[in-house]
Length: 347
Image (cartoon, rainbow, N blue to C red):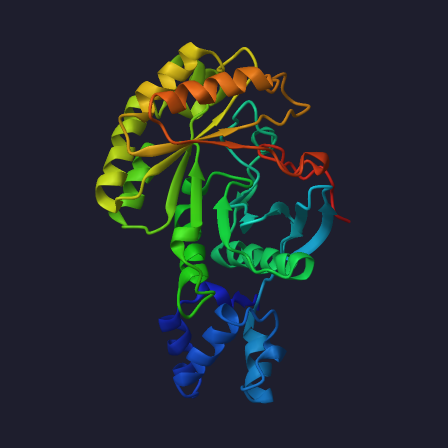
């Protein structure tokens, strides 16, 4: 008989199971706490359960924790991990240390189906979605790395790793629930940012579900013709459709949007491009993160020159937009934005 993944049961189903096998209902709460507060990886760790009950659980269920297959450390302190999943698939996650924060960049899918032309993950096949437990486990593992390497816990989480989070909607929201719940890791949703390539109907669903976390849109071009060239998703989710969904999201949540904008040399880095970005961004309560491009072998894009970046950012600032320039971290280990592609295969 194939064992069931116990972390796919909610508390109600877990309670039903224990009462059905003649156990007290409170045992469900004990197991729940072991799984989601104490991050237990085996039933043997659940020491307030009898040995016979632990054996019974072992026969019927399994916990499918991820494990660190390889770990690389950058000269700037960034740590990239390849995580092995229960079925031997690999994903990547990154710890990004800074003076004022410890950020985990986590994945939501094995591979990706969106084929963004500048992103290494976009050249991979999408194998499958991650489940809520696998998303949760990345946070636990990267938090452990932050404590071990810097003696600090995680402060922030960004869903900017492999995959499109809104194409794994249910599991991403369940994972975030376990990360933020009082009977989970109890992290603040305000410290979590979900980044999407732009799926208008799912952005509206986030609004209807009244999510508390932050939303970022990978924009990278503020006219449809250019965005279509680098992000095929734009052909079915135009800038007009995205604008409507983002305004709907803001109206429901009152959370400002973050626009992520990579500057590619001679593609989207002129003052005309900046004006297009201004026109789009000024319609929506937002801020803009300008991101350095990290070249990948699959594409011919180049990072813009420093003076062009400065002129672009200054033009936005002079016109009243909040702008942050994000310098790349972990480039020497292919851990920077757009570089996650499982190049270092685990044994």
